[in-house]
Image 1 (cartoon, rainbow, N blue to C red):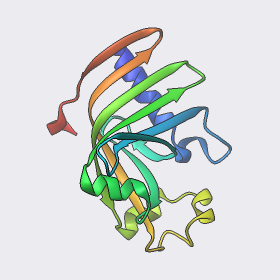
Image 2 (cartoon, rainbow, N blue to C red):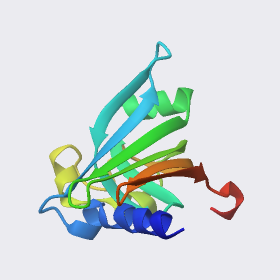
Image 3 (cartoon, rainbow, N blue to C red):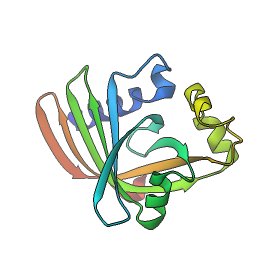
Length: 151
């Protein structure tokens, strides 16, 4: 449990709302199933997180990620934290939100390069809810399942 708790702290501190836009010391990668049924991975910035309950990402509703999520919500999120040399692989499901209150809460200034403001109809939020984990922290690996009903 100690390693799981440490990994959850790394997730919480590795969002744009936690560190600000000065830059993360971590890389987030989202893997989804593409239109031909193959895994497809790409970098993405996490907006906010509530530990292992959910992690949010902002993107355009017409971009590849939401289109792929609509066809298959299963995903893998990988976080590599350079400072602690930790790798956190989470698998679970994503849902898409276009709710204005949520978009306002998840908004960060760098999104202004792509969207007018949180009211922009093109903006959406991807909510990832992990179900399983494979975590490398403190040079040890742990794997397991989350109690989905508790999230």
